[in-house]
Length: 112
View 1 (spheres, one colour):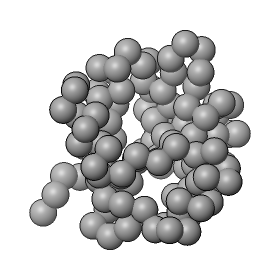
View 2 (view 1 turned 30 degrees about the vertical axis):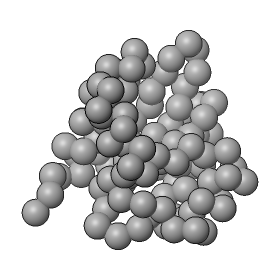
View 3 (view 1 turned 90 degrees about the horizontal axis):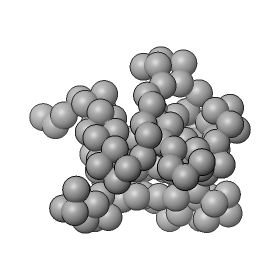
């Protein structure tokens, strides 16, 4: 059994703080598609955290696109401990959503 999704969100918050981002967490429910809002150099980013066993699909991308506008962010990002489907990559690329998959996340943690 893995870590709880809320614990995953908190760990991501610590990771972004180590990269000199200001981090705020959205409510556990009613987050409008963002789990964290990170800010650096005046740029606000809505972050959707997905702790999954399978691949993350387009629903996560759609959620963070809505969250970006709702939370008045400039950018949007989805971070997962897994990987993304091809459809998720395509939708993210056409909407300028950053995707961080398992391998990239592990690289970020190593330099933390």
